[in-house]
Amino acid sequence: MVGDKLGAPRVAVLGLHLEANAFAPPTTLADFTAQCLERGEAITRLARAPTSGLPAEFPGFYGRMDATGPWVPVPVLVASAPPGGPIDQAVFQGFLDEIRVGLAAALPLDAVYVGSHGASSAVADEDSDGTLLAMVRAIVGPAVPVVVSHDLHCNVSEKLVESATALVVYRTNPHVDMAARAAESAGLIREALAGERFATAFIRLPLTPPTVTLLTAEGPYADLIRDAEALMAADPRIANASVAGGFVFSDLPKCGITVTVTARGGDQRAAREAALGLARRGWTERGRHTRRLLSVAEATELALRAGRGEHAPVIFSDSGDNPGGGGRGNTPYVLQALHEAGVQGAVLGNFIDPALAAEAHALGEGAVFAAGFNRVEDQFGKGFTARARVVVLRDGNGVGRRGTMAGRQFSLGPSALLELQGSGMLVVVGSLRRQLLEPRMLEMHGIDIGAARVVVVKSRGHFRAGFDEFFTPDRVFEVDAPGLTSPVLKNFPWKRLPRPVFPLDENAEWREPGWN
Image (cartoon, rainbow, N blue to C red; front, side, top):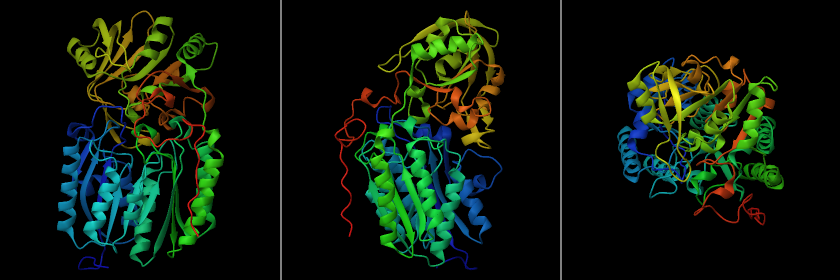
């Protein structure tokens, strides 16, 4: 071990957070700047601060490293953007250059922690995460531990697995364990620094489930996660067993459920046996990855009943237009249907429309005007206009109190609460693409969620961890409306997805690896 003058290990810290949706516009430098782009010692300061806008992994990693002994953080770059299209190639190359220079200047290093989302891609690089890890490995050399943590919606490549000492993937969806998985990564780094040797086994299945079947409270994916956790608890040889659900909207050859098992003692056989067991169950039970969604008409009828008090209050996921998966947050299908039907007690957020938010701010609270929702139409979103009153104006900045955003800073950009004339429907309009996953995003606009009869969220699943105090699982419904993140996979013109793949192709087959 190199260490500093006192023997404390020098650990580089870096990360790239982007979930790349191939059907969305490219992600630009402005997208990273608006969410999180930190360099050098600012990363350490924010990671140890009570709250910050850093991805939750970094406070979790620093917390565990601080608690387990002396160390010297060597923070390089943390770049995080909301889910969107592939990264502009020049931006990605700029990040790579920064990291290359930063790591080279920091040598010698004892370990590297990479806290990335794992489903990124760049305009001219389908495997940006693999490229990043291969570069890190080339700089630090073969003997330095490099531990990576990823979102469970990551698309894992062979290049990444070969470059990393260990891969640790989230085990909760909604994601409330980001800090815990980063802490687990820190633990593996401590083990490696103490001399532990690791071996890894990796399997990819031709299985790309819709995102709505990748929840971890119950269902086929939840069962796989429980199996992985049971393996780790029962067998001390298994340092980590990660089952990644993948992110199908990246439309890449590396999409699909993957199993990555890391074994202690360099025990390749143990890693392979564990990986095969998990993969076999995942493939055998592939048919369970189905979920019935409500049509817009069915959702409207249910909302009418809830509004009249004939049904308990409900929450709808406008899952086809989830900004948390690259959606633009601007499709008005559910909004228009509920408004025109006169649904009572309805709230929707966040409708992402910076022009509309700016107009509301210019008019001021109390103004009544013709609110044009999504005035720039495309194949995924038509326009819709309704008379509306500006109820509340906010700067859009807040700190989350529950679920995935608990204790974390967020920004919607300049935001407004509009009340649609006729129906009384309340709509939170934001300027930045942020999914509605945190109650404070509504509450900061004066909305009493407990009094609402119908809540519509532009979110696929993470809202469940934020709104479970208001809505039990039997009152949560996903709506089948058009958008860039529709769970109905046949709606998309796939170009790079490996075919055949289940459930798009019933004839998909999996051949087990020919391990001896």
